[in-house]
Length: 171
Ligand code: ZN
Image (cartoon, rainbow, N blue to C red; front, side, top):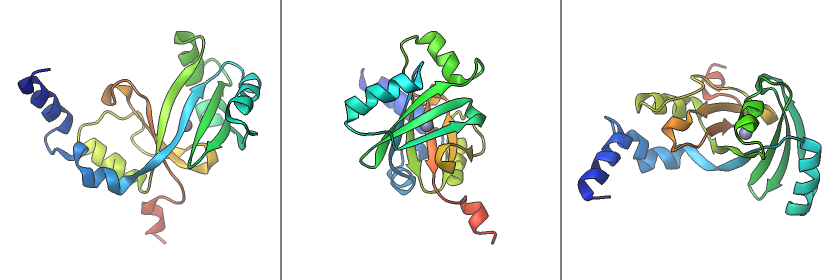
């Protein structure tokens, strides 16, 4: 890529405010890779496999009705693998498996300390969101998905533990 092209791409990424590539924003809000979401056709089969692969038992099982998925978490350090099985045909995981019959990485989740602030900043930077507002995900965390068109094809999930900052300042 020549330099002129490179600077065009960068300025497109930066948007009008340049906020999305601002180190301060990233270091303030994104603390770690929370988990990798992996679509599987059979959760029970995948659990057996991952117990061998990761050398330990599953840490957490949960149905997330809102997302029409059954999940199993395996902790790895401060991150985790989240295995996801669809509970019906309308599930995003069912749609993913139609395109990718062997399963695969469905999303990457990063932990943030103030999900509402991050969503606000993304909106200002013109980043395309799937969820305009945070909603409840697994582990009762607040989550929101960012559209893959904004992230080089990766479905990005934001996740925050504890109450929303807007709620905690109200009481
Ligand atoms: Zn997830």
